[in-house]
Image (cartoon, rainbow, N blue to C red):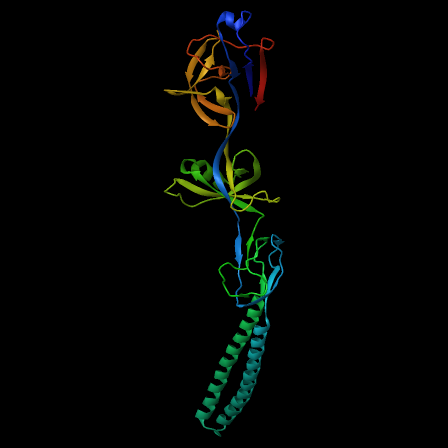
Length: 370
């Protein structure tokens, strides 16, 4: 598709001006052509980490070491901090001693029980005495299990003294300094760990546009999304829709969407506002005109069509999708017709116009092709 613009460079009127002699109004025109128009929805979005964790201690104790640097990238399982293990090691030794003591008593009770079982078969001991010994063995077995649970729990507490990174990500500003006493579930935690790669953008989609988006997701067709800065001037990153929310917000008539971005260079930052441009579909072989050819009147939008005799005709049009420079027209014009793009002041139906040619105080500009 080629759109050709003839742009008039108007000079002051003089006796030598051709336009002054004829009285024709000079205008710039573009030829209606065909091309592909991407259907893009632009919505305000917010950068949201896929995972954002407040790293907290699971136990109480003194913070002995902080092993990360603020702003550092860490991997899942990296040691971030160390709580004093000594109180828990003392308790562990105590519980292990109790366990060993009770295990010894259980072993002795089992030997006695076996002896009583032999004696009862020989009728050498009362049945009640043998039964009491059996109960003693079972009681000690329960005690040993409880002792083992205390030992296992204390080992777990010592493990919790080593605070590990739960996910890959970037650590923020430290909330607690080394030497402080911290408690389990402390509100602010130790530090916030944010997954930066990949990262997501949450934005909303008007309910009238849900149909084609949901259909493409159902078909498994990728839906590209571009993140632009808040001024909508610079493209920051390119990603892809991952999910359409399960319900419409009745207050706003929109549904939330999440797009995932690799963010390998960390162009996107958590809580950043961006403009999300979603490529929904493409209108193929559509009639296209420059957007500045469109005018608005009492009956809606229209264009000035320049006929073969260089008179203009007001033509109502049905407008489709548009981008920054071009607009799809679904009705009202035909391919190859010329529409006025500049110099529309004082134009009306039937007015004769002139289209300056190259070398006559004008220049012809070749538009982009699609």
